[in-house]
Length: 330
Image 1 (cartoon, rainbow, N blue to C red):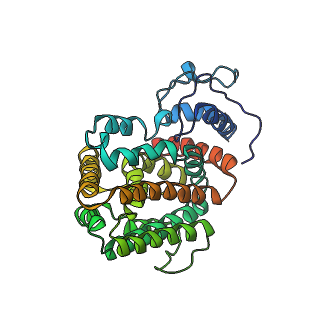
Image 2: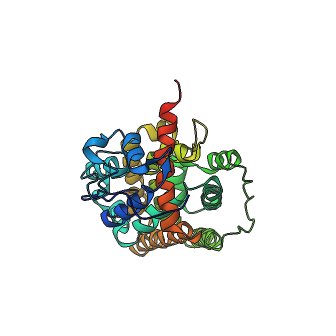
Image 3: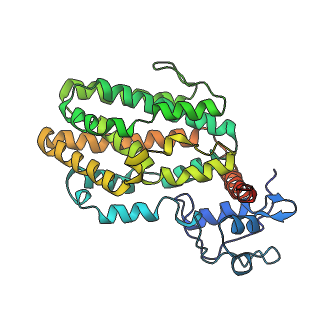
């Protein structure tokens, strides 16, 4: 569908997919130009998120929109995550604290938010993005399984079985008709190949020095999925009309169901291995590797292009998909 002039604006927008208020407002305004049966998507959006349209959205007065809608979009993946981070005691010191600080210094939330929303524009784009994630996780889990570094092994041996995503990503790819690449194959995405090479370079250095640069990659990807990724399962499913149990890679089973306890245990394990097995320089290397991992992720999220256009359409897909599934008989 074409994107015309905005039909909705936000007076006091909150965060959407982790994006700042101004950018979130522009995306939702563009998404509101999508129509279904002649209804502006701003109305569909409000209905999908259980927000009273008379209170928050009107089609005739675009300058009067959601002042502060209490919606899923408002703080996707942030509200509960922030509570977990604040309540944690282990992340107030040591390596866990320093890794959390990279969220401000190395994590590009704008690209993450746009790329996440854009991946919901079509199954084709979702397939390309998920293929990149599969390649990264496959490399990580291969490197972690083969690691000879005591610092890496102490963390991965304890949590590896609960954190693995490779198999579930393969099932998600098969659902949308994409064949997962085998380990070692060259991925068509340059950003993905660079990411994979960085993972193997970190693993090689860990094995040679007894360091733990791989833990920087563990933090960036697995923590992202545990903290906010699970909140994306429903919207992705609605937008792309996936199976009821999709996307599978956001489901961590009982480990994910007890997120607070699970994340606290990983934080504590990171601190313990840093204190017992790593030098100050090696701890610095883990933090630097996390920043590099964030940069590689940003490159993967942005590589497909059309971030603003596809993110707006992706948001509209989520709202329309939610309305569609709500209308289905139980």
